[in-house]
Image (cartoon, rainbow, N blue to C red; front, side, top):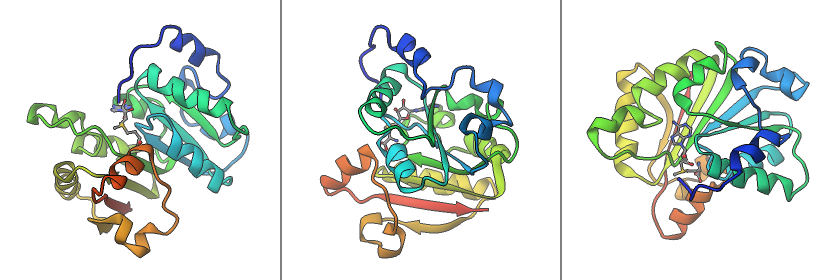
Amino acid sequence: MRLRNISGSREIIGESEFAVREPEKQKGNWQNVFCNSQPIHIEIGMGKGRFIMDMAKAHPDINYIGIEKYSSVLLRAIQKMGQQEALPNVRFVRMDAETITEVFAEEEVERIFLNFSDPWPKDRHAKRRLPSREFLARYDKILTKEGQLEFKTDNKDLFLFALDELEDAGWRAEKVTRDLHRDEEMMQGNIMTEYEDKFSSLGNPIYKYIIVR
Ligand code: SAM
């Protein structure tokens, strides 16, 4: 998702109490940002933040960090946050997830969510796909020993690619569904993302895997 550039978005993000500036400085100390010792869960490529905010409402005992590459998109999440009751357990970071290991220390993150990641259909761009082996190697460093990775998409090719990448990286999916919304067990506690809402209402099946390490 890339929205029209909105002038001043970087400045608004810079001043927002919900956005963390210079996130590398929090490496190893993210719980201090929330002033508690709750587990850290992150969504990479959070878009406008619907999922992470709804997760934070449903699980006040977890700290959520939403990561988004584009200021114009992150701005929407910040605006949404400002229009509702403040959520003390949510922060946003504007960054490219390629440098995620510079921002989180080893075993600092308990769960990673990838929702409707950009497919990057050209082979030469495979490394940019968030469930690629290159990204899995980064996630491997920051996840706790019992950490989890959850991936949802409506893109069949991306899902098949993601399953192959898992196997090649020596990871194993604990749960897999090729039609999440008809899978009673995996739908328990499911929180819809913006894209999930859009594509499932068009009748597209939603694919999901969960990795438990
Ligand atoms: N997760 C949301 C949802 O399910 O509604 C948004 C999905 S949107 C298709 C993918 C988002 O991931 C975009 O907002 C894009 O800017 C962001 N993104 C893609 N690559 C990224 C990266 N390397 N680091 C951070 N964000 C990224």
